[in-house]
Image (cartoon, rainbow, N blue to C red; front, side, top):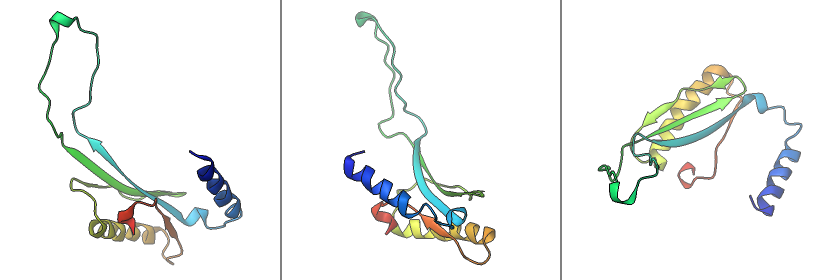
Length: 118
């Protein structure tokens, strides 16, 4: 992190230190996982190299979900690239999980600044 990012995080923490909503806050994120294709390294003698064919684009799965003070929501697994439209659909599903926990709708969702989140 650079100095500006550190300063912004400290300012955010100081502004929210007395925030009473943290128990009603959900943090949303998504991650990608390769199904195969992890590189393995080992020493081989130059004249006795062992090579195996590798898939150029190994399959990936993506997962999106939220976590809060009271625990996680469901995890949604998908294979396509996430775009704004599919993100909105997944957010609707995850928000239903949040409404099941807080029936009054008094909760908030934090997510990162990924362009597809807007």
